[in-house]
Image 1 (cartoon, rainbow, N blue to C red):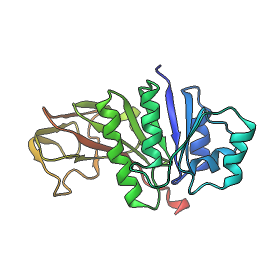
Image 2: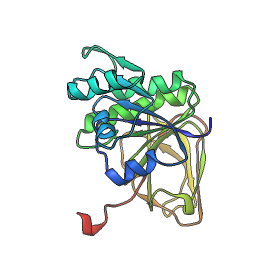
Image 3: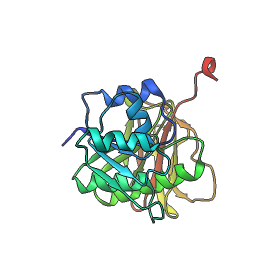
Image 4: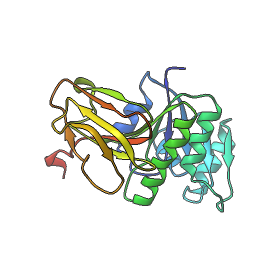
Length: 223
């Protein structure tokens, strides 16, 4: 199971970016999460599973899937303890999926974005590689060091933030702004918008968890 499971949520969904992912040979399973179903329905893409409380999805779309397909549907009470995206992520983990992309997990709602970032910890604890992606950002959690290759980078910038507290002995090598034996805290913006200085950047730390964001700017002609 080296191919991706893609969760389509109800946030920002750039048409070409999303359809390219869904049609990629690397995508093996699609989970539609509540309002993300609207995008799938409009583009004639059938998910493999559907989850949500469906408080933001037109009833005719839910009825279409219920009456015309055999897609498993997990409906939750709107008064619940987890988001639709988290429910979809937990389903993916329940199915034994180890590579998961969360698409439509960003957008205008900063609270939804932050909840989705925190949900990545569920996948990390389960030994899965889950990432939030949109046209300009790739977000994942790390509990160990990593080597980033410039030729494989999502964009020219990367930022690192501690997830749950101070990270001791934090190091960045090969970057424009290197760090050595740094104490990474949640209370400053020191590690925002770093860049490659060499072909590889090594991030290392002995204990803790960090958020890694790889980013690129919106092209000027589309602003």
